[in-house]
Amino acid sequence: MKHAAILVTCLPVLLLAACGRTEPVGDMPDQDALAAAANAAAANAITNQQADAQEQTRDYVNAARGFSITFPESWVMDKGASTADGVVYADPGAGADMRVFWQKNDDDQTLQQIVEALHDSSEGVDGDFVGDDEYRGTANDGEGNIVSIRLLKQPDGSIVTATFVYPEQVRDQYQPVADTALKSLRLFTPKGEAQEAPVATGNTAN
Picture: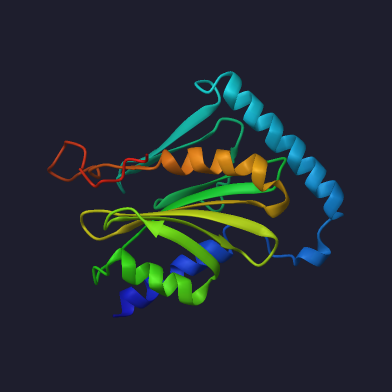
């Protein structure tokens, strides 16, 4: 059960540390100024995406782990936080970021078991299952940010976790961006496995 414990431990850490911040809310810059700047940046990002969605997105493909996702074009990769198992991208002007990572699940826990542990260890988690292999929800990180989350279970039992974090003050502006980005997460057969066709995992977003 050692690996199961590690998996359950890592998922809340992804939620609570997803925004990549360590300072308490009280030490942050003036909240009105932060909200105004975030509102402007988010509105600008949404306007640009609506004007030309094809040119305003970039695809990240992890062939070794079998997943892909689409980020806003203007976002910047955090190379220090990215690994062979996943990637972190951030909006440089608005205090938002998105993380997507693969995790091993040696004990083949069900997604329901993993989400139950997540509820027990994280604040304000709320969401729904989509079939047996997908979960979509939201949580609070305790620092004034909303975390939108999507979990997908691969056929071998491993888990792909995507989190989109943004300041609560700009929920109306960022929630549509988060929804679009999380819906773009797809699974496929990892490179090196015998099967070449896409895996039918029921993970197509509606």
